[in-house]
Image 1: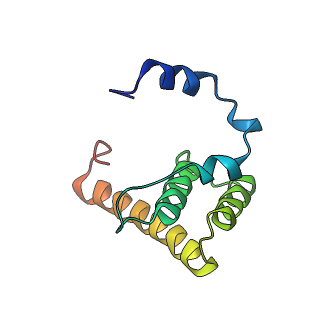
Image 2: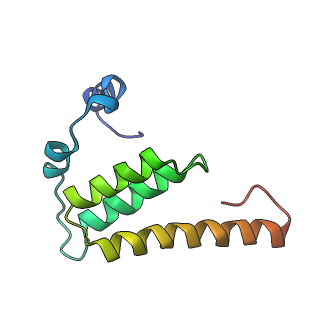
Image 3: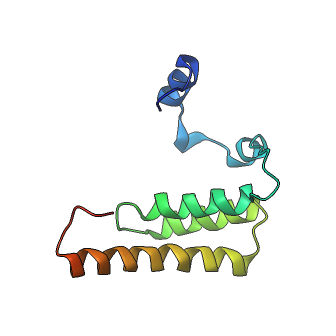
Length: 105
């Protein structure tokens, strides 16, 4: 969190994510780049985070689907984003295998 103001860091440290209501939080997100889709980008990163431990549980899948609905991301786009993350993971695994390394991301 380099460069983040101290009060933001403190809020982050004390944020109770398990009790958080996504809807008002997501409504506060704004962007100033007209070519960037905040909804799709947020959902893409949510999928990546949910899969980070290599266990994309049913609960995490349900949370991602809920986030997609709240973000108004169409079902086919949400599915495509899931497949994109899966494909990226497969490409990373292939790269590691071909180069015989676990260091590369």
